Length: 353
Image (cartoon, rainbow, N blue to C red; front, side, top):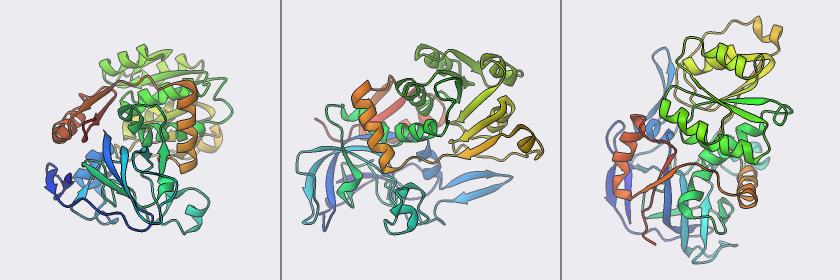
């Protein structure tokens, strides 16, 4: 098989050839049909997340071992199964849930493997889908996509379940008040589409890129706001009728987090999702005085992936622009993503169909 791997942090991915793996035990071998390119892959290829103030969170120190194949938004065709694998057969098309834990700790047993302190996520701590083949440790991570095209299904594994889980955290104002979505890239457009499919009231979208604001407006945002405008917070407050009950920050920078907090009404909630990086200094009295909440949201659970796929099957595919590119273009796509040139999602198609 051919795989594009991080061999040295900060360098382009290298194409390596190796024998096709043979599944053992409960393992399942997939021929990769579609592999979404996610902004998180930029951090993974760099080897760190920016904590602000000159501090970095090293992914290598957390357990990422090189060489490692990136790619955590994957759909594949089952081509071989281990002797103990149940519930899948050769020829099946399956979405891979990549957010794997140890499977044994209390966090995993309650259904939140994505929050396990010993993660083994595909495309991070085990080889991912920027490859012709992918091995999955257990069929429980494989989901039937029905008639959904693989290139449209693949982003559901991260972009989809991440925004779906964040939207669920909004609470009782979901159907009665506007939500503010900061960031109109692949995550933002996915979140906007899912918010509508889930019965959300309306969405105000914030982005510094006019092309992405235009895409959000065409996708149904009731208002789009330039996050770099000096009065951006005032515009958000006006667009939400006095302040936002919920802001979902899909960027996660110092500037966007501050903007989100400045835009909240009393009892409002800022849900932080994005991993752009940085730090903020907070005044403490406004938290109790305004009863505001900051909540993190990291990907989603296996249960939420199942809920999301069911939602998509019932309501239709999210109207997110998806472009397909061959596997060999992966470094070019990552460069375009880093430069902010991607609207929607790019999905690699390693296996011709």
